[in-house]
Image 1 (cartoon, rainbow, N blue to C red):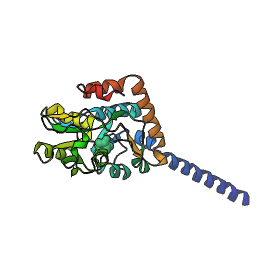
Image 2 (image 1 turned 90 degrees about the vertical axis):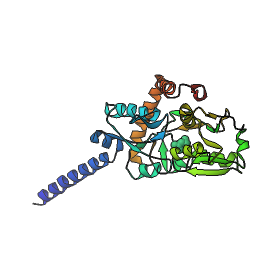
Image 3 (image 1 turned 90 degrees about the horizontal axis):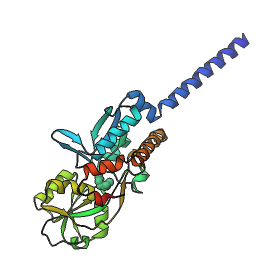
Image 4 (image 1 turned 45 degrees about the vertical axis):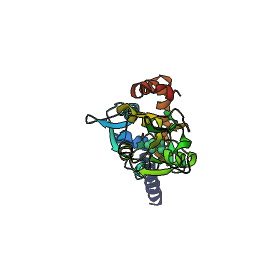
Length: 266
Ligand code: GLU
C-alpha cells in the first residue's frame, strides 16, 4: 500500500512538472504568435512614406518591413494585422499586449530603452527643419523666437527644445494635425525626422527641407521589455541582418524615398 502511495505521488509530481513546462513554453511570445498564426504590428497611418493610407491602401517602408517579418516568422507575408499607433500611444499599446511589436518610425533612445526593448536599427534618419519656400529661415538657430510645429512625444520635440531653446513650440498629437498647422500658416517651420518631412514635401513642393541635419537616429522595431519577447527579438534581429545583407533595406529605401536617398545613405 505504502509503495502504491509513493508511486502515485511520483506520477502526480511528474504530471505537475510537465504541466509547468508546457506553461513556460506558452509564455514565449514567438511560439504564441506561431500558434496564433498572425503577427500583430503597431504602425503609423499618417507618416508617409513609412506608414500611410493612400487610395484606401495602407502602405510604406514600415508596412513592407512588417510583411517581411511575417514571412520570416510565419512563412506568409500576409499573416499580419496592423493596428494604428501614434507617438503618444505606441508604448502603451505595446506594453498592454494590444500589439506584438511596433514598426513605427521609432527612434532607439536611452530613455525609451528603459521601458521597451529594440531590435538593431533598420533605418537611419536625422532631425531636420521644413519651411515654406522663400522664407528667410536658413538654420535651426533662426527658429528661436518663431512658431515651430512639432509632434508631441517625438525626438523632434526633444531636439528642437535643445537646439533652439527660445522657440515657440506648437505641439500636435499627430503628423496630420501638425502639417495642417503648416498649411494654415499657424507656424513658420516644422521640425521632425527628415524621412517623414520628405513625405510632406513629395506632395507639397511649396515646402522644402533645409540641408542641415542635427541628429542621427536609428529606427528600431520595439518589443515588450520581457523575457518572453527575447526569442521574438532574436528572430527579428536575424531577419533585419539578412535584409540588410541581401540589399533589401537599400531597395526599400530607394522605393519609398527615391528623391532623397542621398540623405539616407547608411
Ligand atoms: N523617429 C522619431 C521618434 O521616434 C519621430 C517619428 C515618430 O515619433 O514616429 O520620436
